Image (cartoon, rainbow, N blue to C red; front, side, top):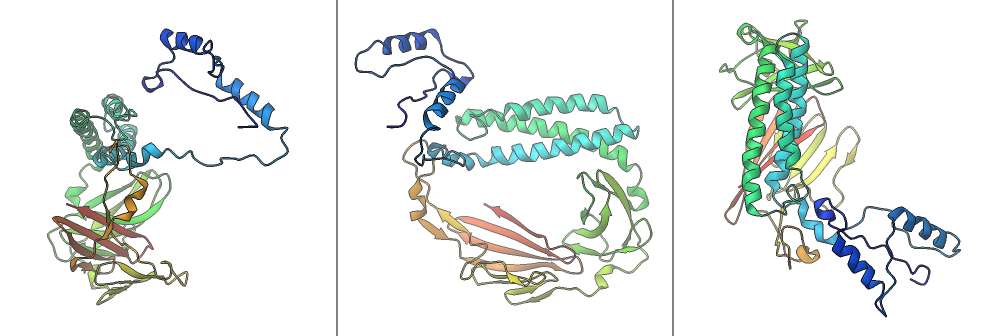
Length: 374
């Protein structure tokens, strides 16, 4: 404070998008005339910082510097409050982005009136953006707000699904009847990946690409997973089901599953009796991914009792009461084949049930973990 005696104080109805009113300006005038109080003048933020630089720059001594994001201690909890709101917002953003792409693609190919469909999507976008208001999406509004929000989200999802379905039908045509499947890639880069949810009752099925080359496939529960080679960016390719060919599930799997251990083309993965990861060895990079002595996938439960403003705050002492979720009921082998190894872990904690599906792939170093908590 001995270097700078001037402080910037912002005032006004900023929370609602407004500025200072007459009452505030009159209060500032009166404060400036009260003996013993600091002198208060009205100015601009840029003028203040210009003056601050003129005051500080000539100083030769080290001046404290904050060079990262400002830490707002009364906002720690807004990352977790109303998780449904945050998850739905992001899922709808992604859905609308993909739906708009499908709608334009279908329109360019002459299959639908994409202008009218876009007008419908604009209504949905307004719903999404309205619920991104700064007191709604942080989870800090009253309960009635989220009751209305859930109804609006359902309306926005209905709009997108209707446009998505019409566009997709226009693009797919009669391909399903001829046992062919159009594989779409909405990313801006070409990529390979798994085509899932191809529902075929047959226990054996074979798939080929456009050139007639066989594709690796595996039945996982009720759907077939087919590893599809490069699909063009913002484009598509077509794969075909060939009932007369032998299933690629006869191909020898590259996975080795033992008690508490799975060896894949990319990893050696081991877990303990609590379902926590005790080793993840990267075979290509020749290194251990987990730090020495550390556990992976260690599920933890913390007690959350803020002193005040429970939608906003997570107190700094919350870590003092932590419990591990270590009651692993069973590990279920869902499927192991030429495409992927899928395992499902089941935990219980008090009255809660936790189910986690872990997937390792034979053609990709990617690891998927889908966790459901009841």
